[in-house]
Figure 1: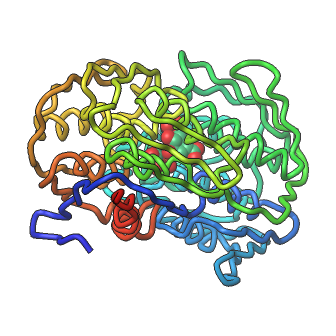
Figure 2: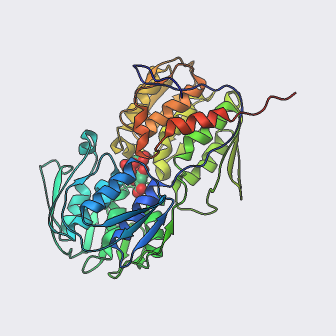
Figure 3: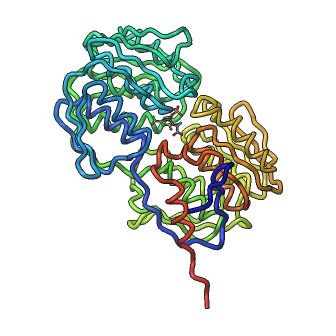
Amino acid sequence: MTPSGDLGWTAPSASGPLAATVALPGSKSLTNRVLVLAALSVTPTLVTAPLRARDTTLMCGALRSLGVRIDDEGADWRVHPGRFSAGPVDCGLAGTVMRFVPPLAGFADGDSCFDGDPHARTRPMRTLLDGLRQAGLSISDDGTGGLPFTVHGNGSIGGGRVELDASASSQFVSALLLAGARFDKGLEIHHVGASLPSLPHIEMSLACLAEAGVEVDASQPNRWVVVPGAIDLPDTVIEPDLSNAAPFLAAALVCGGSVTVPHWPATTTQPGDLLRELFTHLGAEVRLAPDGLTVTGPGLAGLRPLVADLHEASELTPVIAAICALAPGRSRLSGVAHIRGHETDRLAALRTELAAAGSDVSETEDGLVIGPAPLHPAVFRAYADHRMAQAGAVLGLAVPGVVVDDIASTTKTLADFPGLWQSLLAQRETPAG
Ligand SMILES: O=C(O)C1=C[C@@H](OP(=O)(O)O)[C@@H](O)[C@H](O)C1
Ligand SMILES: C=C(OP(=O)(O)O)C(=O)O
C-alpha cells in the first residue's frame, strides 16, 4: 500500500515498463440502468457481475427505499419488482440516481424526498424536473430547481409530449426513456437545445430498453417516442466499466509496456470504447482480441499530443487531460462545456490542479488547451470527484511526489482503486538478460 500522509495519498511513480492485466468490475452506467429497468419490470431479474461501488449502492438504497426488494445472491443481485412505495432517497453524488429515480417515485402513493451530497445540490436538475412536470408529475423544490426536492407521487404518471433542453446532461433524456413505457400515454420526448452530449449513453438506454421489450421510435434526431407497455428485462450480465479502464490503460502509455483489460466487449454502447481511438492518437498500439483489450504504450518519450472533441465521451476528459499534460506538444480538448456540471466543474478543476503541478494549461469555453511544460510535485485536489483523483494518479506516474488529497472519492465507481493501482504497477516487464 502506498503511504497516505496528512495531505493525502502519495501517487506511486512509474518504475519501468508494465506487463499487466487488470480485471475491472462492472459498468456503473449499465448497472444502474439495469437496476432501474429491473425495478420497473413485470418479473424478477438476476443482475450478474454488477458494479459494487458507491453509485450502485446508492441506486440499490434508493430502490429499496421505494419498496423494491433486492437480494444478494453471491456477487449478483436479484431484483424483485413490486408496487412502489414512497420513501426518502439519498442520491449521494450520483447523477444516475438523482436523474433516473424521480419518475419511479411518481409511481408510488405519497411523498418521496430526494437529497444528496453538498455538491449534488449544484448539479443541473431543473430541466428534468420541468420535463417530469410536463408529463404530469407533481414535484416541489426549494426554488433552486435542483436537490433537495420532493416528488408527490399518486400512483401513476400521465406522460405525453415533453420538451426539454438536455444540453447540460444526456441523463435527462435517459431518465425519461427508461421509465416512459410505464407512463399512461407513453412519452414523446423532444430535445430542443443546441447540443446533446454523451450520445452513446442515450444509445445505451435505448439498447437496454430493447432488451426489456420496450418499443422506442428513435428514427428522427432529437426525438424519441416511447410506446406504453410492459417492461420485462431478462437476466442480465454487466460488462466491465470501460471508462474506468482509462487510468489503467493510460499507465501503459506513461510507463511503457502493456496493459490488458480482459472481457472487453467486441461491441458495446459504452463510450469508454472510444479509448481505443484516443489512445492510438496519443501514441499507443491498441489491440482488441479474444483475451481482451491490450494497450502497448510508448512511454513518456513517445507520447503524442491530442486534438479531440470529447463530447461523446466527456467522462474520459480528466484522465485524457492528465496524459496530455505529459505529452511533448500542444493538445486541445473540446466539446465538453457541460462537464462544468459533473461531480465538480471539471474544466476549472483540471485547469487549477494541472497548473499547480506546473502545466501550461488554459480553459476555453468548451474545453482545455494543454501545452508542454516541466512538471513538479504538488497536491492534486480531487474535489470529491473520482475521475479527478484518477487523473492525479496518472500524473503521479510521471511526476514523483504528486499527492491526491481525496483518493477515497474513487469509491464512487471503484471499491478499491488504490489496491488495483498498486497491483497494476507491481506487474512489470522482466528485465532482459
Ligand atoms: O447516463 C449515464 O450513465 C452517464 C451519462 C453521462 O452524463 P452527461 O451526459 O451528464 O455527461 C456521463 O458523463 C456519466 O458519467 C454517465
Ligand atoms: C459524470 C459522471 O457521473 P454521474 O453519473 O454522477 O453523472 C462520471 O462518472 O464521470
